[in-house]
Image 1 (cartoon, rainbow over the protein chains, first blue to last red):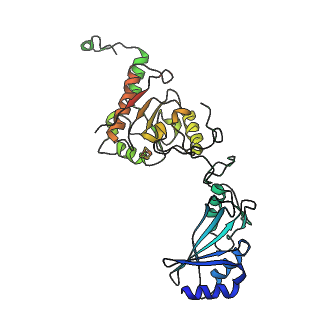
Image 2 (image 1 turned 90 degrees about the vertical axis):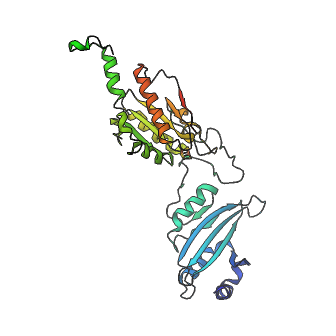
Image 3 (image 1 turned 60 degrees about the vertical axis):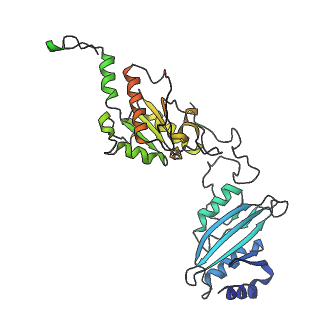
Length: 160
Length: 167
Ligand code: SF4
């Protein structure tokens, strides 16, 4: 299955793939940011690959000068019982990436979570609001430069 | 209450005392069960620990019918507004038990999202230690509230009570 996935992806999207990595039997494909929806749509719709399940979508902050953030997509094909990980890298200067809600609608809340925690903006998302923190909160708590105890005064308590 | 001449078929008391006596034996808790401590709160209400012995078996899910709020769980900043709103809707006199480490001090959650002790936004009468406290510890907390009422303390003028954890 692994070879089929790699073959099909490189045949169609060779210029969108940054690199492909295999570690302990886990296949990871790092993609260029703008290709993400096309690749996902292809993986989802292709009859043979059939990645029908988006198991997880998450943000990550590596706190490095270039390409500080990553969005990770963990896919699973129920038909082939095969897992695939996609990654896109996001630079601090441009925090936008296209939403994959048009492919898997389950991405809706997961993208909202990544937006809430890291401030990554998912374009074309139907309802990009904060997931956990209050609407009026201005920071993104899972960023590495956010202090563990929070920023005093940034979250309101009720009046005593 | 003075039990004067009970043998003669009457007794004298003050209205405050008899109201306090009635109140203390029918505290109706508002179960503010927010996380894991709420499981122990359920067991405190269940047949084994049997809070009905103290007249508090009627858990009211409407704040307007309750006079004791048991806050059992981790209170986040987002939830704090809800807790305060429910507290505000309870009729006076009302009492608050902070059950568990999280509610009393933030507990193991020293983080940006958790309020470091609910006394930052509601007045607390009794703190019950433990993570989670055993139901008998919570019973002790309830009995302390009853003693406070018996002594005629008003919820405003509080002496804080801390229930230690027993081995
Ligand atoms: S004190 Fe312990 S048991 Fe209670 S809510 Fe906190 S973590 Fe859960």
